Amino acid sequence: MKEIYDIVIIGGGTNGLSIASYLGKCGLSVCICEDRCECGGGAENTEPIPGVNIDPHATYLYGGAAPAFEQLELHKFGFRMVYMNGAAGGITSDGKCYLISPEHRDETIASMRKFSQKDADMFEMLYDIGDDVDPNKIIVEILRSIYWTPPPPSHIKLGPDELPWSKVFKEYLPGLYDDEWNKMSVLDIADVLVESEPLKVGLAMGSWYNGPHPSWKGCGIPGIACNLLLYYSHGTPRGGMHSYAHSLVRCALYHGAKIYTNSRVEEIIVEDGEAKGVILADDAHAKNKRIYASKAVLSNTHVMQTFLDLIPSRELDRDFVERVKGLNLKGGSLFVLSLVTSEMPKYIGGADELFSDGRWPTVVAIPADGREQMLNQERDVYALNTHPTSMDSMITGLCSHDVFDRTRCYNDELYLFSPIYIQVPPPEYHRDGPEAVNR
Image (cartoon, rainbow, N blue to C red; front, side, top):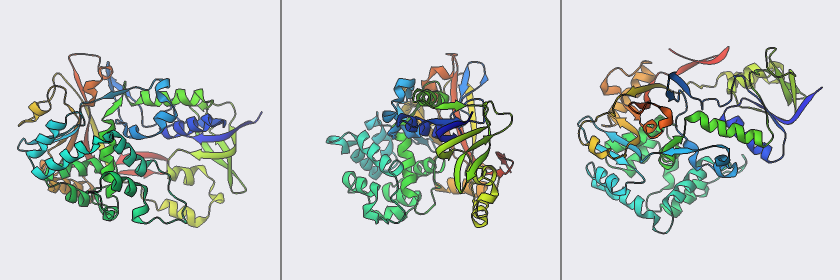
C-alpha cells in the first residue's frame, strides 16, 4: 500500500520540526524522515558524567524574537526558558570590566564609563529610548525586520531606504543609523557606534562566534544583530537545548505530522524534473521504503549531501552540479569545552564585584583588550591553520548560563560552565558523510 503525504521532510532537526508544525497546522499531511534515533539535530544534550547535562552543539536560543513561539504556542508543548541577569560582559588583561545587562541599567552605564564617557552616554540614551515604547518591542521589530522578513521577489530591487530594517532603524534610532551601514562590516559599524576597544571586541566576537566574520563588508547589520539576538533572549531552554526540540516534536505530532526515526533517506525520487518522494535505506525503521509527496519534498540536510548524494546525477545539469561542488562551506569552527567546578570562577580586578549578586553575564569575553588579539586569532586559525598559539591570539567566551538552571547539574555543590568557546581551524567536508574533521 502506497504511503503518500502532501509534504515529505528529510531531516528532523529544529528547522524540519518547525516546518512540519507550521504545515500541519495549515492542514497539510506531513511526514518527517530522520536518520538518527531521535529528532532535534544540533539541539541535543548529553550526560558525560552522571548528573551533569551539557549542550554539545547549540547552546543559546537566538530565536527568542521569532514569531514561531507565539504562532506555534510552544509553551503549551512544554517549552520553558531560564533567563540570566546579564547578557554579556568583558574583562581586559589588566582587570577592567564591563557589563551589558537589560536588568541593570545603572551598573551597565557605570561600567562603560570606566572605558569611555561617550560609550556611557550612548548606552544611557539606548536605555532611555523606551520612554514611549517598550525597548524589547524595538528589539523585536529590529530582529524581525532582519531575520524574519521574507525577501522580495528576485525581480524587485530595494533601495537602501526601502529595506525593512532601514525603516525600523530610522523610526527608533534616527540619530544613530545611516544607510551606509548596509555596506559596512561589523568593525566598521563598531567604530562608528563606540569608542572603547574592549567594547568593540565584544561586538565583533559576538558576531564572529555566532554569524558573519566582523571584517566582512556588507555583513555589518546582521553581524551586529547577532549580539541583539543574544541580548534579547539572554537565556536557554530549561533542561537544555533538547527540551526545546522536544517541544517542537510534541507540536509537530499534535498537528498531525508522522515522524520516522532510524529512517535514513537514500534517494529523492525525481519524475519529470519534480521531486515526488523519497526512497529509504534498506535498514530504515519505516515499513514502506518508498514514501511519496503529492506537493513537495523538503530537504533539511546538508546542501551538498542533498544535491550530490540524494538526487540522481542524471536529473541535474552538469553545470549546476559543478557549481554545487564548488561551494565553500568550511567557514570557521568552535572548540567547545564544558567545565564542572566546585566554586564559581574568580576574576581579577573589579569583575568579581560587578558580576556578583546574580549578575552573571550569559557570556564573558576574556581578555577583551583590543582588536589586535582578535586579528591574531584570525591569523592563526585561517592563515596558519592552527589553534590559537598564545594569549596574544586568544579571546575565549566563558558562558555561565548553566549556573541558573539547576536541572543541568543536580549536585548543589558543583557548578557547570558550558561552554567555553575558542575559535579553531575550519572543518573539512567529506562526501561519504558530512563529517567535521579538523585538519
